[in-house]
Image 1 (cartoon, rainbow, N blue to C red):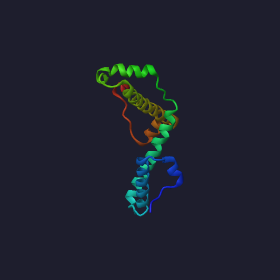
Image 2: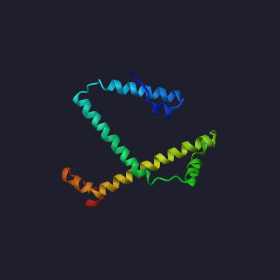
Image 3: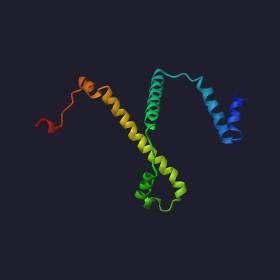
Image 4: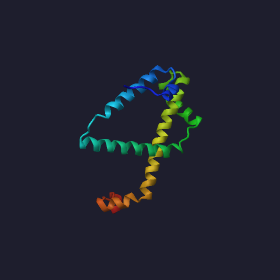
Length: 140
């Protein structure tokens, strides 16, 4: 039988949707205990876990440097004024802010990855494993 703890109920209060979501989550987790995965499924799950952890790590590093300034939001708004002309500014502002944050977060993650490429000299190591063709310009 699935039950909520006192702590969970205190946190959720009268939030019917939150209570329902938590009950469903507990039911799924309970059912998962009986599932026996194939070796292929286990490998796939492990790979998914590693990918999620890497994404979490990159986000945690990149988030520290991401800042959104009002002038940037204004610029995004102006650049998309035609698309946004019928939208309520109060409603669209958080959406623009989130979109800009996601864009900057992606850019920062690329910087973090590039720093790791340099730190671990990945390009030099890569040459040990594959033949890299130089661009035509460098051959002349």
